[in-house]
Image 1 (cartoon, rainbow, N blue to C red):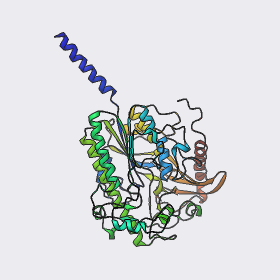
Image 2: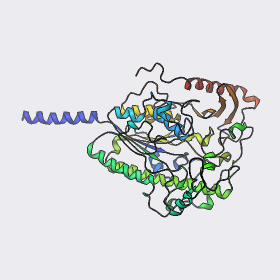
Image 3: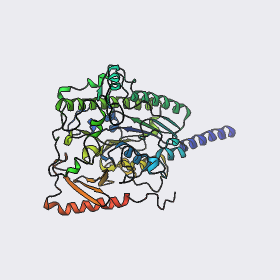
Image 4: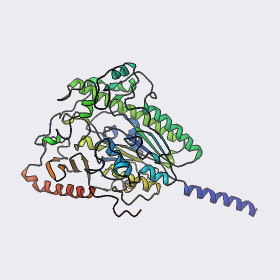
Length: 479
């Protein structure tokens, strides 16, 4: 009898030890060019059809005031993966390589791998496929961004004039095909297969899934295009330069070059006509709904594998997106449409299911994931863990955020958005917007005499951040 009790006790202790040592999984969902226009955000009354992201938001914490630290993909992704803020000389354009600008960094895929995790990358995570590639245990970038399926689209592309980086592409296609012929569908199926493997082998994972949709070109199966009534698509009502704003905010920061230089049928300058604008917005919406469906499949696959209860899901976008506001398309700016992003964290470690108005930045994700997994982050990390907000969404962790693009730098809080344009020691102009009464940023009030002290206050904030980010983050690093 005693022997049986000893055996039972031994089995119990082994079971307890396995439970204690079980590592917490991370599903890290990256979305390219997504502004927070899902229904769960009620963003300016736009009627996006996104049931699966809405459901995920209801199952965790949705950050209503989340922002990118730089509105361009390469730099933004380098920043989030290393936990380091962009600066004038580091992480500052689409071609950024994290391993070049911050070779001493310990990126997320490395720190999880070194702590016993399988690190999986499917789709677009870093801008460059070979950036810190040695720290993935498995990687599949998939097909090229312009993954056309319609033979006519391919023919037109192959015979097109040359753009900035190769043949110009069509802006839209929506053939009558199934969900899994495009690359975003293929990586979803691949991830679901991997969940089943992990369910059987018990290995902990940091799985990064990088959806290209809704990045240009807007390509998706026809059924997602058909979800929207083309004639009811709303156009931007502020396609003009903000009143009193400096020309540098328009001319030097943004001319929609990504769209104009790389896609067929786009005028080299000037406003897009209503037909083309409506086509683009319709395509963007359809592409978002397609990507949303893939996220639904992905999360269902996680649930079906029995792994959801030990997996935190983090959904984020590398930056926002213009759909004609101020005459802009794409990103590459410090205006609100370019820098505000969706961010949702659904973690079984926390029971909160609510929205949070606490301001947060993408640089905060690195320390958050480390804390969720019980990993000590490097001491150079420049973000702040969001776990207190996951525990209580009503608290305010940050009152303001900092973002930049090229020579523009901005500080944003619930009251104001203030931007300066600086190259080295050369000051080129500024802007101030009242975010309570002018969230679309149509009137620059920086030159109003009554705002002199306000401008000074925010200018000091930017100068302090500028001095901070221009320092070497690895000085005096002890771990």
